[in-house]
Picture 1 (tube, one colour):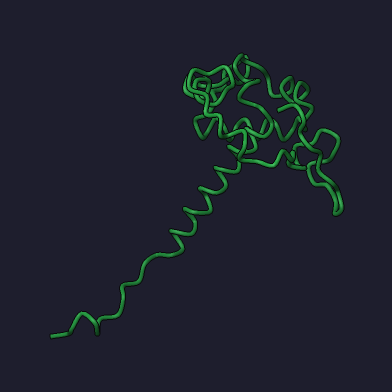
Picture 2 (cartoon, rainbow, N blue to C red; picture 1 turned 180 degrees about the horizontal axis):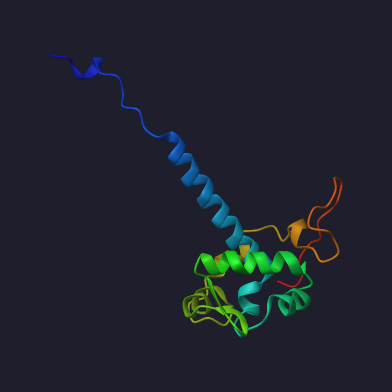
Length: 136
C-alpha cells in the first residue's frame, strides 16, 4: 500500500484557473472604466452611445463597445431608444442611488484610459499622456 506522503500531488487545470482569473480582471477593468468615466450617473435615463460620448467628451466608437460589454455583464440594458442602468445599478452605483457604494469613487486614480479620450484615436502612439478627470 502506498503511503500518502509518497503520492504525488494531483494535477490541476491551472490554465482554466488562470483564464478565469484573467476574465475576472477584464470584467473588473470594464466596470472600473465605467466608474472612472462616470457612466452610471449619466445612464439613469436612456441615451444613445453617440450622445453619451458627446456628453462625456469621450471617443464615440469605443463608447458603444464599452456599453455593449456593460450590457453583457448585466450592469445596463439596451433598448431601441439607447442604453440605461438596471434598477440595481441605479440603486448601488449612482450618486443618487438609495444604496450608493461610495467607495467605488476611490478605486481609481482619476486617469481617463487613453482609448476613450475623444481627442485621440483608439490606438494612440507612444508618449501620449492621459488627461486627469476633474469632474468627479
